[in-house]
Length: 315
Image (tube, rainbow, N blue to C red; front, side):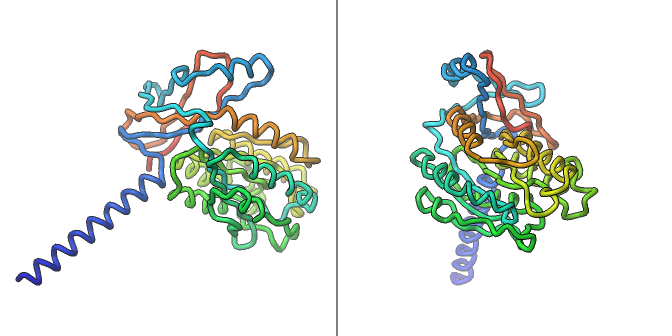
């Protein structure tokens, strides 16, 4: 009997440990809701010198959050200096070779991230995501993990968004912080046929947006054409850029492109660095308990434009 009791006691402890581990993993892998805390990234978009001055005067108590029609209780508002970013840099491997001229600028961007930042790098290639560097606080190491793109149709991913979904799971065990994906891609999902490549029809784009919202990750996108369809089809370019714009808009990020091609990422990096210096990490306590998509609205009385996730599904 003593032996049976010991075994039962041991099994009970083991099960409790497993349950606790699963609870911790779940709490890190999704936006916490139903009367608990929800953390979102809010980016202030100043458009001229006047709104830049206003943006620089914002204070934590200037923000208000609603879910649907309900005002929510804000628990904390952190400035950029109080919440180092976690940035996953994803590069599509079949982009045109001109992208290789931008690798130095991308390395500089990583090296110049603020102290305490954590960076992951990866390539969207055949077989989807290939991680070059797991999340690390060694920015130099992360920068040096970058290589030139292969620039071949044989290195094309199934589509860009399955790799985004795989990357999102890697945020699960990361600490609190501003969660960001920088996606350098043509944005086109023709994996289920060109007719399904529209931004409104891509299944994996929809999945990537939902998972990003659920995990509180904002996606910023740089467009560059691939050696495939987006190098010669205007419709493919429109579909790709539309998809990149949609995932950025829905997750609180921003999309960077100009025309159907690109010359340099330098102006994109300048604007991205400015936006990252005006980001706020807001945690509020959701008063909602039901299922279904919860639309978020963040406001301030100041005359500035805010980007934030459009909402989330708590499931």
